[in-house]
Every structure is written in C-alpha cells, then in structure tokens.
Length: 236
Image (cartoon, rainbow, N blue to C red):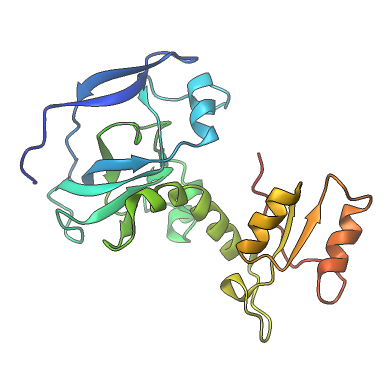
C-alpha cells in the first residue's frame, strides 16, 4: 500500500434520486482482496451520469452514489490476491467495474452481460472522487507515457466504439489505409462536423440535414455501391 492515503476525500455525491449533487467529504474506501484503489487524477463526464442522477433507467442505482465511469489515475493500494498490478502503475476505471468471471457470458468474453456485473457510478461508487475502487481483473492498464487527461474519456466512448468494431466482425479490405484498415463513412450534420471527421480519417461524409436520400448517399459513398458492412451508432 502506498503511503499517505488519507482517511477522508472529496467527492460528488447524490443522496437521493434526482439529486442534488453535493460536493462533500466521504471516507476513502479500502480495496477488497481482488480490488485496487486508484487515486483518480482525471475523470470524464458521460450523459449516462445524468441518467444515473435522474433515475431514468429501470435498473436502480445505489444510494448514496458517487457517479463517474471514466476515471484515470494511479494505483495506490491493492488487495492481497492482486499480483499482476503494482503500486504506482497507471490504471483506468471503466463502466464495467467488475463481473463474476464465472458465468457463461464472462467465459465467452461478454462480461458486460454478466447478471452480477458491477457498474461504476451506478451500482457501485464511481470516479467522481479522489480515490476509487475497481476490480483488478477489470481495470484498464494504462502505459505511463499515455497522458491521463487524454485517456480518461476514451475509457467510455472510445471503448464503446472499439468494442462495436470488434463485435461487427468487419475485416479490412486490400490496400486500405484507414482506421483499423477499414474505410469509414461519417454521418452527421454541418461543415464543422465534416471537417472534424475528415481530419480524423473519414473517407466520406454524408450530411443527414441536407440529404434528400441519406441511404442512397451512404450507398454511393461505398466503393462498390452496395452499402456499408457495418454501422456504428454513437448518438444517443
């Protein structure tokens, strides 16, 4: 265990569904046998955090609740069963805080579907605090040369898109020099979004606000005119 872990910390806490969110001092949690304690340096904010505050989803949150599931920081303590993460290493706490690792879903790499899944900032306290707990088997291992402020939001949105690409099962075509070898068609509205997506590597852009036939435009943007092999929806 690292030295100088305080007994108290500052956190954003809701005591009841609907808020308010209160900035207050709470105890620093202690990691269980298979958990690590991460000193959170940066945390992203996701729209899911608002759903958690307002109780918009059918799954109830824990109360009181510390929200957040995009936290990046430094491991400062670990449980006695944790052998593969060292004190001082960088780690990230994601939406999936932990799972049983034994059910059929966990055994086939579908841990988010685990019936005993623990959700950061929803069913367990998340990253809107100075020190947060994560299951060692599920925290993201972050290389020390990766800036923590840059990687924090990737722990939600970035992982979601990457998982979608993997689940889609698409494969790169010949001689394509695009993200993961795939040719990307971006769909959004406005010149600003077109500029951004093209700078990020999109091969084509379809503006749904101006299009009279969006499906046709997307098909026309594919190399063979038959349409895309996979679609990732990132708007909610």
